[in-house]
Every structure is written in structure tokens, then in C-alpha cells.
Image (cartoon, rainbow over all chains, first blue to last red; front, top):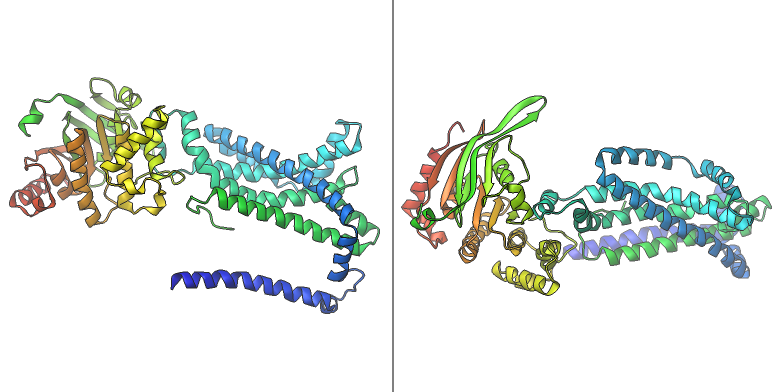
Length: 272
Length: 261
């Protein structure tokens, strides 16, 4: 009866959050939520109104979505690759490696809000085109935000090996390179996904924030800001909903990729 | 020792091996004055309680540790040369299978490292799996196997590189009694078929008597060789041997040879 029990558990763990979401949605649409929060439909527009705006402005919204994704994904890839390379170097030169990683983690603790204007200032001579300058600045911010989580997790994946596995490689007369290729790299794969579970959502969030401070006005995050400044709350809310959707879709794609790549492996790390 | 072995060459020569560790600024003697000649094709056990240095001694032979004194020759060369020539197959306390590889690919791992051609790799891996009776599980993943099956894959992998010497470090200590007995018989069958020199580390007296030609009894504090006991029980051996008087007497003899335990 164990399988029945786990199935039931899976089902209830899906039902509760969905039921909660539906409840909030109903309260929102019936304006019960507004009474509770002591606000009005101008500040917090009704879901039906938000949906209306999204469908009326779909082409403009899509333009901004593409602009945001065009920053988030390159930043995510650059940051992850950079983080992984740092982890490899740290794993090969362990004496300095773990210390170096501590410095990188410390760098990661600098808030994006502080980082973004500084980097916008750095990139002001990159190109005469404002759009290119802004793009560079935003990608750099996202890259920095994604580097640390990858380097710290990948380092664990490259160094936390099964007992005796290094001895085994040594007995085959493997040097550092072969051990890296045959043991450390494959061992680190689940840890890459642990890192991505953090950095995929964080790439979207840091893109939105970086857009706030960018010179060139584009992107979902920037539209949220512009519409709030001009008191277009319903439109701002439309972009907030779209921003959530970007994050959720990217996360779903990640989970799908994970289920393919880790299909045959013990689930080393639980969802946290 | 049986007549056949007496005439054989010495495969591993250990002379006055000593091992001193540094722990909290103090010298700890793990091994002192261990001298053993291990013959080609011999099944020898290193038997003793924990702390007697038996695993240390095996790791010294495997060139995973370097003794602080004494001399060691493996087939006339240093352990390092022997390791680089891949003359050792090692089976550890756990199977150390890579969970991202299938059973077959785990056995193929050392062959990949040695750049054996793909066709030959598959052929040899399948042959080794047949030897340990796991042909049907070639495409399974390690997590789908029981502990005993995993350790058999470990043995198949160790044998895949055709080593002359098989070093086994308490390979069956984590298994239940029934699985262990089965693997004892399997190991003896494989040994008879392949003619390897086997150095087998264990803390189990019955196990060492059942398997070995000779037992090196190591005593702790400091780790030293306190007796070498010949096991002249007939081969091939089966589990029924354990019910005989000769077997029980040998077990008693081995037990009585420990010092300071």
C-alpha cells in the first residue's frame, strides 16, 4: 500500500497550493481581497482587467518579454559557465580553491540594486548605441549573480566523491586530467542542477532589477517601473504577471531538463 | 604450504616494512618490521582486528601509501611501477561503482582509461560479467543491484584489466552472511579460473581460513606480523568444509595466534 500512500501524498501536495491559489484568485476578483488589504481596484486592478490589458497589448508586451529573456538567458549561460570553470580550477588547486570560492560568495552577497548602477557606469564607453551599452550592463549584472551559485555548488560536485573513488582512479594510473574527466565532471552533474534551481529564477529577477537602472528603456522590469511612475497600475500589474510567467516557464523547462539528464541517477539532492 | 606453491616465484616481497604516522604531533606506529613473501598464484590473507595495520599494508602494496621504512618489490619492480603498469586490480570495502554508468560501463571504465578499442572493451566486460554471473544485469544501473551484486561488479571491474595481482580490502564485510558465503565460493572459482595472486584483507577468521593458502596474522599496537599459518585444506573448497574438524581446528589455531588483543 506504500505506492498508494505516496501517490496520495503527491496528490495532496499539489491540491493544497492549487486550492489556496484559487481561493486568493476568487477573493481578488470579488474584491474581498481589497477590503482585507484596505485598497481599491485602481491600485490593485482586478484579474479580469489585467487579462484584458495583456491581450490588448500582446505585441508590445511580447517585445518586452523578448528583451528581458535576451538578457536573462545569455547572463545565465555566461555566469554558469564562468562559475563552473572557477569550480574546476578551485577543485584542481584545492589549497587556494576553497578560499577563492569564499571571496566569490562574498561578492554574491552585494545586492543587485547596488551593483546595477555601478556596472551601468562601467559600460558607458562600450558602444555609442544606448541599447547596446544597456544590454552589456544588464548581461554583466546577471552573469555576476549566476556565477557564485554555480561555482559553489559545482565545486561540491567536483570534490565530494564516493569513498575510495579517487584511490580507484589512482590504481588505474590516472592523472589529474583523467580523474577530472572520468570521475569529477560526471559526479558534478546533479550539483549543476542544484545551482540552476537557484540561478534560473535569480537570472530573471536580476534582469528585471538591472532594467530599472539601465539607460535604455526596455524589458518587462522596466515597464513595471515606467507604468508605476505614470500611475498606470493596471498595466504595471500586467507586466508583473508576465514577469512571473517568464520565471515559472523557465523553471519548468529546467525541471524538464533535469528529469531527462538525471533520469538514471540516484536523486542525490532533494528539492530545497 | 602446498607443493605447487613452494616452487613458484615470489610475486610480492615485503621486507621490514614500517609505517609511522604523525597524529597530533605524536608519532604513531601503524606497522613495524613486517616481512612477507607472497608467491605467484597464491591466495594470502592479511588477518587481524582493527588497528593492526592490515589495510595500511595492502595500501602500501597498492602504492596508495608509502612505507616510512623497509623495502617492497612487486614482480621485481617498485609498487609505483607496478601500479603504472596496471598490474593491480583492487576491490575496496565498498563497490565504488559510478552511479551514472551502467553495470557494463562500470566494468569498461578501466579499459576506457587504458584506451582499449571499443569492440574489445565490450567483449571483455561481458566476459567478466559472465564470470561473476551478472550477464543479465549488464545494462542495469548500480542502484538497481543488491550489495552483493554490486561487489561482484567491483570484482569484475578489477579483473577486466587482466591484472596479475588482485588486492581485496575487506570486500565482503558489509554483506550479510548468506551473500558472503555465496561470494566466497564464487571468488575461489574465479581465482581457480584466472590464476591471480590474491591478497585478501579481513578481520573474519573463518573467512580467511576458508579462502586462503596462507594467513598472515597481524596484531595491533603496534601493527606487527605475529604468525604466518599455512592452510593445507583440500581444494576445491565448498561450504561443507566449514563443518569438518580440520577446519574448526585451524580456526582455533589462528585465534590462538593473536597477541595482545
